[in-house]
Image 1 (cartoon, rainbow, N blue to C red):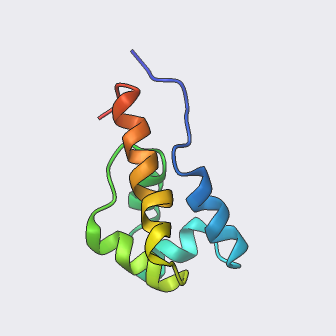
Image 2 (cartoon, helix red, strand yellow; image 1 turned 30 degrees about the horizontal axis):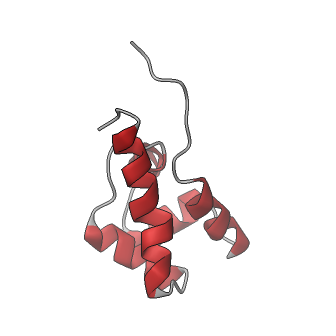
Length: 83
């Protein structure tokens, strides 16, 4: 059964856009392929800690941003039944 198309990382995508970047440009800067970034942004594969830190460094995240932009969306995916 297919899951409805959801975008768990909408806030991260917005932060990327507001920083003058695209998902693809950030992916390249942090060493991910466009496909890997897309898979993560769709919630099909989790970001690992190194990827989160690299993205945060590129976008000048504050410590609380990691929770808001990575942990909270992951919690929502788990509660929604997607792993």
